Image (cartoon, rainbow, N blue to C red; front, side, top):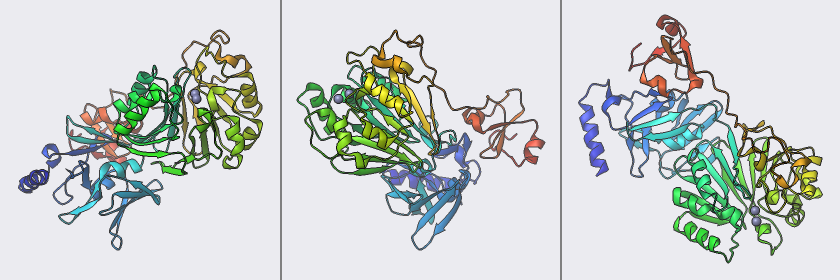
Length: 482
Ligand SMILES: [Zn+2]
Ligand SMILES: [Zn+2]
C-alpha cells in the first residue's frame, strides 16, 4: 500500500516544476530550522517499509555540512564532518561511525538510481538530534552543537536509592530506576531526554531501591536492551520487574558475559563481569564502566569491598566513581581506591536516611584519595558533562566530614535547591535586528521568518543589512526571501 502511495506521489511530482516541492511533498526535512530543498534531480524523502524516513544522500548530507563521497567497490555512501566519518553501506542494517558499527533497523538503499539514507541513524551518528514533527510532517534535525560530542551523566536525586541516566545525543542508558515511590519522578525526568526508545536499561541488582522504579519505566518507554545480574529475588517488586521486563520483548543479557555497547559519540559502555560467588544481593551488582576517550566513569551499584578486592585487576584508573552502596562503609576499600584513584566521587543517598549513609569510614576514604565528593542528598540531581577530555559538574557543593549520615541540619544550605548549570548559550538575537543569519547553514532570514524561531540560539547571528549578510557569504532564505 505504502509503495503505491509513494509511486503515486512520485508520479504526481514528476509533473510539477522543481521549485516549491518541499512545501507540499509528503515529508520535509529541516536542519536547524532551515528547510532542505529537494528537487527532482536530488530525489525526495520517503518512508520505507520499516517506517523510517529515507532521504536523498548527497543533498541532505551537504546541507548538513558534510563532505560526501561514494565508494563504488563496497557500494558505500561516505559522509564526513568535524573529524567524524560515517560510512553507510547500501543494503546493510548498520552504519559505521569512525569504524565502529552502529546497528539500525533499516538499510540505505538505491531507488530510481539515487542513493537514500535512513536519516535518523546517520545524523545521530554526527551527534545531531532528529525529531519527527507530525504536525508539519517534518523531520527536524537539531545540530545542538552544545551537545554534540558531549555525554551527560545524570545522577538523579531519588532519595535513598540509585537512578542514573547516561545521555549520549540520541542514545540513552538508564542504570537503575530508584524505588517504586520514585518511579514517577524517574519517568518524568527521563521524558526530557529520551529520544524514541530508551536504548539500554541496566538493573544492577534485585533490591527495591534499584529496580523499584523500573516497572514504571517499562510502562512509559519502549526499551531496546535490558542487562541485569541474572540473580532474582523472592519479592513482589522483583516479580513485577521481571514480568514487565519479559513483556518488553527486548534484548536481554546478564552481566555474566563481558559486553561492550558502542555509543554514538564513540564512547563505550562496558559491562564488567565480576569473579567470585556472593550471597549478598548487593554483591551481584552489575558493574558498568563508561569509557569516553580520556574519561572513565565507574558505576559500582551496591557492590561491597569483597567484590572490589576479588576483582582488583579488572579496575583501572578512572575519573568519576559512583560510590558503591550509597556511601556505605561496606564499599570503597583502600586497595580499590588505590587502584581506581577517582577525581570525583558521587554518592547517591537520601537525606536523613536510616542507614547513616554516607558512613564516616567511606567518606574519609573518598576524601583522603583527594577526590571531590558530591551527594544527591545535598545537591539534588547531579549532572556531569564530559567531552571525552574534560569533566564538569552541575554542582559545586562538595561534601565534607560534616555530611556523614546525610543529616538535614548539618549544613546551612542542605535544603536549598542547587541550581543546575546549563551549557552557556548566547543571548537570544536582538529582535530589533533586521536580519538573522544561521552560522551553521550560512543562510539568513528576515527576523520574523518562522525558521528563526526554530534556530538554535547558538547558531544565530544578527546581521545589520542584507548587503552585509551577502558580503559575509550568507545566502537568502527561500521562504522569507530577505
Ligand atoms: Zn541500594
Ligand atoms: Zn542493594
